[in-house]
Amino acid sequence: MRKRKIYIKKKLKYRIKVICFIIFTVLILNCVNNILKSFRVSENESLINENEQVIDNQKKENQEENTLLNENNSYQIPNNRQDIDNNTTDYTTNNEPINNFERDINKFKNKKLIAFTFDDGPNSKTTNKLLDNLDKYNARVTFFVVGNRVKTYEDTLKRAYDMGNLIGSHTYNHKNLFELNNNQIVDEIKKTNNVIKEVTGSNTLYLRPPYGNTNKNIKNLANMYNILWDLDTEDWKYKDKNKIAKYIIDNAHDGGIILLHDLYETSIDGALLAMEELSKNGYAFVTIEEMATLKGITLNKASNYFNLK
Image (cartoon, rainbow, N blue to C red; front, side, top):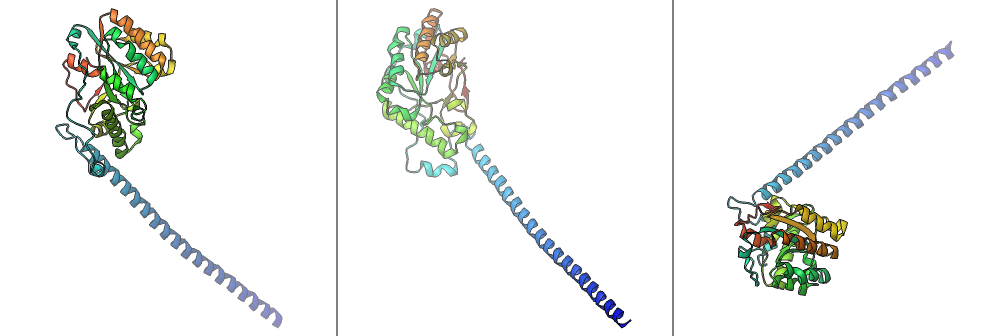
């Protein structure tokens, strides 16, 4: 009997210990859980604050971009670009480009006008082949040059300019301007305009953004006339002079702007074949600047020009 009582007491003590252990464990787990909850809440609050800050910063950037164009469509330097232009010459000008070759364009007044434009050059072989043949058709064209090629082919560019062709910018490295920040956009345009002026002695106010990608902010930063196109020969893809010529002839219209590239001989040959045929159909081949003058169009730097009608 005595042994049984002792056994019962031991068993009771054991149960009491187990119960105490369970209670203690539960309390510890509750404390740990509360600590983790507090940490998560703090972390989430921090993330929310960071996200709100990102949104606020984005709003400020958008507000800065929207203030670039004032009521008179004049150029303004945003605060985050002030350091770019300090101690540097202005890369744009309100003076019209001066071409040192002038031809009498009045003879074209009663003709249909079309503008052949060439991107991505210059190139000594192909660009010069085009220049060699322009006089056959009393033609002048517009070149949108890539800035990093200008110094390598400066003799070709100078010849093109001296003949009376219009020189425009296709940026310095042919980058997608949508993927660049404001500083990089300015650099692409400024460097190209500067190198064109070094070779030709004249400013250019004509820009063709790579891939035709532009928007209000880019136009405000550039402060140039944005010349796009409405006749895309896709010459870079086909490299077939007959296909290129046929497309131009079939789609030609008064005020049209044709997109070509003077890096490819097939593009030059196709353009010359088209000029041969179109000249018989009452067309005159003029630069963008000549076309705007003949049609009495005052170009606007806030607009995109796909054609000049």
